[in-house]
Image (cartoon, rainbow, N blue to C red; front, side, top):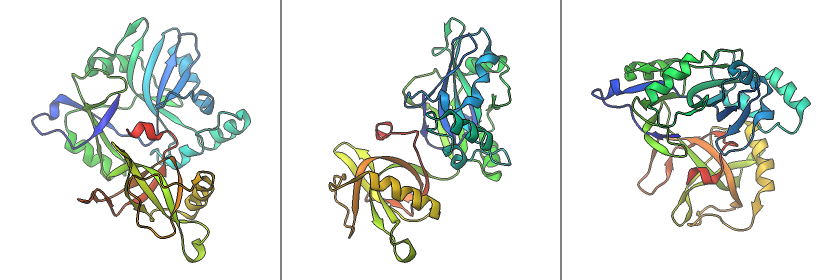
Length: 310
């Protein structure tokens, strides 16, 4: 179940919602069959169990209770806040156990559990959120690499102000009477960000200048529309040199001679790429022409595919 971007519920509806901190990590479904083992799947359905050996103890903690849990994998920084760049060093390492173990020792992860879909022999998807939340908390799942963070009923304004003051991404407001709707982006869950962000697809790039002449200076990006990939602007700020170097390698592998956008951007010297790379950008607003105003680079989203944006 996915949340819809939006604003805080009105004051009159405030007490009808629970508020959870929005985590900056990788969405994960945890399947525990009740024999001590654990299977982890990403939002796309990919088996990511081997990438996170530090989470295997959750299956043992659940014991003989078969369960399906929903949560977010984060890589905490020195102050306990989610750091997506640290998490990226852990993603996609399933093919090398030794390399995965070294990465786990350098950047341990934590699974923030926020919902339960199945427990023992019972599906809970038709159970309202408030009851599911009580069931989840009664499991007392607090371990070295997993926990059930607090949810606050009402007081949305104060909760959002708290996240802003400590540099967190925002809140997710969940209607207390909502059911769990797998695969649905529901208005019953609302994500409220302290900074506006958008998921985009990279369709091309422009060379940098000066010392950046051999690296990307700007990315040409789009979003899916009814006729194909709609061009929504160029992103040329917010990167580190390390980001540019990594992107240069990825973009070279995706090179194509075909413009992927339905409307060809008027950009001299554009290089086109196969539109399969998803990223997240920050921006101030949308223009009337459907362009991102003042976009800046935030991060790659290797956990998403273009189909996830449709």
